[in-house]
Each structure stands twice: as C-alpha cells, then as structure tokens.
Image (cartoon, rainbow, N blue to C red; front, side, top):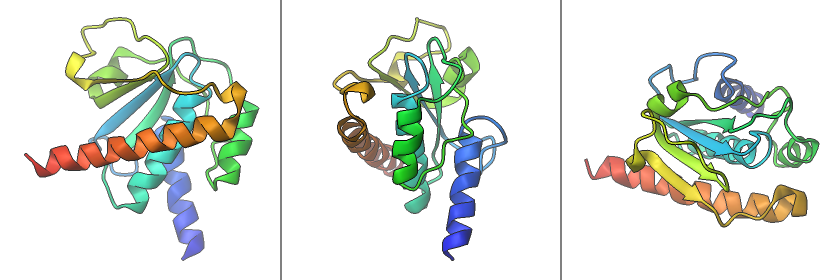
Length: 163
C-alpha cells in the first residue's frame, strides 16, 4: 500500500512539471504557482498542493512556474521537500506561459508580478505577498506556504460546493 501511494504521488509530481499528462487527464482543474525564478516558493507550493489534493481525493493539480525561470530547482528546496516525503529532484523550472494562464482556474503569484496578459483574468489571480524568503530558512517559508495551500484547497472545494 505504501509503495503504491509513493508511486502514485511520484506520477502526480512528475505530471505537475509537464513531463507527462496530468494524472487526472489534461482537463484536471489546474492551479499555477508562479515565483520569480520557478525554483523555490512555487515548487514548494505545487508539491504540497498536489500531495494534499491527492490525499484528500480532490481532482485539482498544480504546476510550478517562474517569471525568469532558473535552470534548476534550488538544492535547499529539493532537500527540504525530500524530508517532507516529496521528490522534486527531476523537476525543471519553466517560464510561465500564456497557455498556463489560460488553462488555470487559479494563478497564485508568490512575491512576484506576472505581466498583464490577455490570458490572465483578474478573477483567477491570487497574490501571496507575505511569504518569507526560502533563503532565510526553508522551514519558515514552507510553513507559511503550506498554510496558504491548505486555505486555497479549502476555498476551491467550497467554491465547487456552492455551484
């Protein structure tokens, strides 16, 4: 059972970075997390979002993107998420695209600004500007991000139940 869960989690996490189709198909409701370099905050948010959504049996999936994407995920993020039981070692930061913004049901910016685009509808955008820098301590940043992720999942479920 534990191995099956780990395999499922790995498939979802790999899907979240765009290496394969999303676990629930290309029509799974998508959340796009965007940070400046796509290598720290958005990775932590997407990894935890996908893990929580899977654990709760929710259809939502997330991807991590950057304004000016780094070439690799930060080592502190890889090791911190590994300690949380989440493997992002194969993730590669990607620049946010208009297609990402069009597909998304929510676009969460983490201490950065996504340039205005026809693809980004204001109603989709959420700004998390109160996050500590990962470079100031993974634990603090992770705790703040996970609190927001949990609130976001609750709001998505609540919005679905009201429609």
